[in-house]
Length: 241
Picture 1: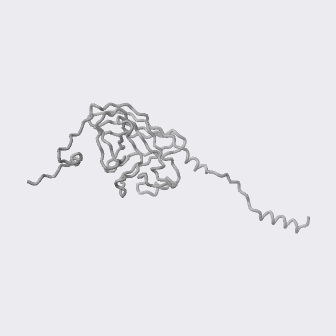
Picture 2 (picture 1 turned 30 degrees about the vertical axis):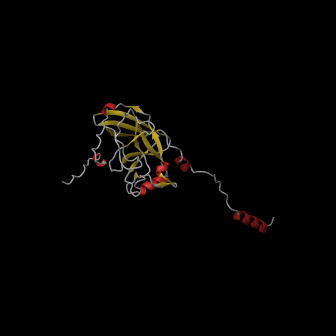
Picture 3 (picture 1 turned 60 degrees about the vertical axis):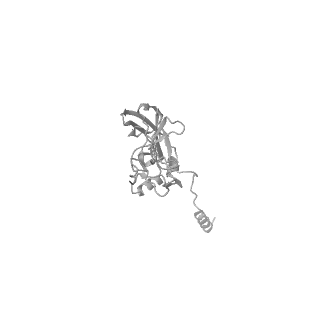
C-alpha cells in the first residue's frame, strides 16, 4: 500500500462523525424531581380553653428527596392561620389545612390568598402551632358558591390536619427566586405547564378525637326585617321618624 493510499484512508476516517452514547429518558436530576414526596403529617391537641382549641401539626419529610411543604396561609380576609373546613361527608369532622385552593368563582379578578413554601430536606421536620376558635367557624378558602363563612352548630368530634406538598425542582426554585415574596405563592403560578394548585400533593394526618359539643353555641336569628349584616357585627340603619 503506497503512501497516497494510506493518506486517503486516514482522511476518510477523520471525516467520519463521532458517535456519542446517549441514553434516552430523564436525567438523574429530573428523575429525582419526579419521585413522589414521602411526607407525613401528625396532629396533636395540646390545650383547650373556652375560646380556642390549640393544636400542634408536625410535618416530616420521610422520603429521600427534598420537598416543599405549605405553611402560614393567608386567608381571603387577610387574616393568617390554617384554613378550617367542614368535611362534606362527615359533619362531625373538621380539616385544618395549609394547602392551595382554586380561586373564588364569585370573584375572579382578585385573589388575596397565599401560602408560604418551606423546603424540608430528607429527615427534617417542621412544627406549627395553630388555634381553632370556638365555637368553630369555617374560613375562606375553601370557597363556596357565594362568599361568607359560617359557624358550625353541630358537634365536632374529630379533626385532621392537611398539608400541601410540592417536589423540589429547578424550575420551581427559579420561580421562587423571581418572586418578590420568594416563598409566597397563590397556586396560580405554573411549573411544567401546570398550575401549582394542580401539581400539589395533599397529605392528611390520621384523625384525632376531640369533644367540643358543650362549647357549641347557636347564633340568635336576625330580627324580622333584619339582614345578614347582623352576623358580621353591623346593625340596620335607624329608621326615619
